Each structure stands twice: as structure tokens, then as C-alpha cells.
Amino acid sequence: MFLQFLYSQSPMSFEKYMNFCLYHPEYGYYAQGNLPGKRGDFVTSPCIHKVFGATVSLQILEIYEILEKPKKFVIVESGAGQGYLALDILTYLVQKGFYFNYWIIEPFQKIKTIQKETLKDFQSYVNWFKSINEIPEFKGVFLSNELFDAFPVHLIEKQNNELKEIWIEVKKDGTIKEFLKKLNNFEIFERVKPYFYSWKDGYRTEVCTQVENFYKALSQKLKEGAIITIDYGYPRADYYIPERNRGTLLCYYHHKVIENPYFKPGEIDMTAHVDFTLLKEMGEKYNFLNIGFTQQGSFLVSLGIEKVLYEVSKGNWKDIEALKFLVFPEGLGSSHWVLIQGRFSNPPKTLKGFLLSNRLYLLK
Image (cartoon, one colour):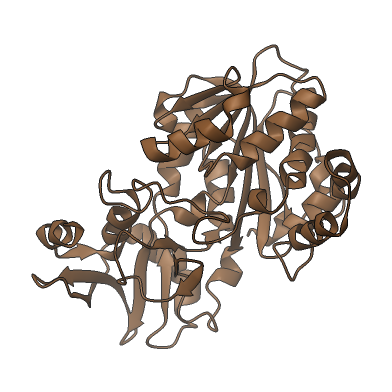
């Protein structure tokens, strides 16, 4: 059925195809209740150990104090998966005597049902919304862990010293073929222009153009507070290096990485690394201060994850191994980055999460 739908929409840009595959309200990957995590197609930090969410809570509490402890302080999360991060944050905060409202943006009913089960002990604190446009204005923190990597991307390729965009054609028998089309999107060309001339013919990469609309909507909702973004990606200068000649697009199917985005459309998860320079630029455009940028390992250690581990667990060897996976480069410590942006009447010079390292200078 989904292939028939794609056939009816053919031909289309790869970005449109990726959008359908992930977000179609009936046939899309997420509409079917598929989730990242231990039971899904890849593992995220909140699935590793509850110490991750507990440690992030310490950064949230510092922001709460900078805002002078407003009566209505809200945590908003988008891309909440099973709800494990929300669960671990709420558990830790309530144990410390903090009772904040927690809003989850979740457009898909099947995923919302899973989140409600995960958060059944905190139902009085949690509200759900279908989109960022539905949430009221708030003071607090907008939090995401592996959200922007799931935004659909344009695929582009250099051919004969020109930049082309990948489009796809879906045949009646369900086969999918790529073809190249002249790039007509000025925004895309401007973004990669400084790097284009160092690429060889055949160089392929991605550009995401949906981030701006998200920041624009968020800027109308977050009156004062911070945006905490945790994701895998690169500063732009690293993203578009000549050696990365096949881009970063990856697909996941039953815990396995596959490189073919046309394998089982709607049944595979599709991701591309985040251009963190773009997030910085969007922050500046929509009047958010860029406060800090560092790798996940440094961020968690700066906040005292070792101490938190013994608060939330017995600290046995499994707990220690989980901490290592979250912090060490061999795990998620260097692949994932943390960017914090904010809007404050009294802006902080830095935050506790950046005590060991602040590499904001990389986001040129």
C-alpha cells in the first residue's frame, strides 16, 4: 500500500521521500509506533542508564535558578521516544523536591500510548501536544535528545562541476530509481558553497532546510529559558570535508545499519547527522544566545555524573560500564554533542555543563 502511495506521488525529491517514509500519518515509520532504543532499531543515551537523565536534570536546575525560580517552570521535550528521558528527569527532580510541569510534543498516537505507560506514575505532571505550534508560551527548558537527526534532508551530488539534487522515481512494480535534477534551491547552494570547490565529482551529501521553521516556532513559545540540544553531528566545516564523500545518511533496520534508503520504505529508520553550525545560526536569527557547545562526555562529567551515579544506583559493575558508554569516546561520549542556547534577562556567562570544555568557537 505504501509503495502504491509513493508511486502516486512520483517523481519527488529525496527530501519528500524521506519525509513520507518517516512521518506519513498512516504508513510512516513513526506512525507505526516504531521507536529508537533497546527495543527499537538503535540505542539512545536514555536507554543506557537512568544516570543520563538524572545528570541532565542538574543542568535544568541551574537554568531554573538563573531564571530566579519562576512559579511556572516548564520542561518541554520533543522526540521523547519511549519517554525514558522524561521518566528519569522527573524521578530525579521529584526526589529532590522539584515539581515541574513536563510537556511532550508527540504527533503519533501509538508512540504517545507507549509514553503514557512509561510515565504512568507522573501523569499529573505531564501534558501531551501534537506539535510545537500547539504548546502555550512558557518559561523553562526546551529539551531534545536525537531530534534534529530525524529531520528530512535534501540529497545533493556534484556532477560535471555542478550541484545536482537527487530525486526519485517509483515504478508501478515498486522499484525505486534515483535521478539527478538541477538544483534550484538557493539556500542549499549558499550553505555548501564554501566547500563545493574542494569536492570531487560524485561527492554526495545532505542539507536540511526544515530547521528554520522549527526555530521560528520555538522562538514564539519560549519566552525565557534555554534550548538543550543533544544529538550526533558535526560543526559545518567538519560535515562537508572532502573525505566525507558519501555524506552521513544512514538507515536502521532491526538493530542493523543499512546504507540503502530504498529498502523497505516505511519500515526503516532514516537519519542524517546534524549540522550544529546551522543550529547556532538559527539561534542567532531568532534571538537566542549561544551559550555553549561540547561533546556529551565532557558535558556529563562537568555536571558530576560520577556522583550522580551513586545517587541513582548501587554503582555496581553494570552501572559503571553504562557510565563509561555514556562518557567515553568508544561509546557515545564523543559522537554526541550538546548545544545550549537561551534567552535570559540576565544571561549567564557559562553553565556548569561547560566547565571542562566549551567549543562554541567550532561553530563558525
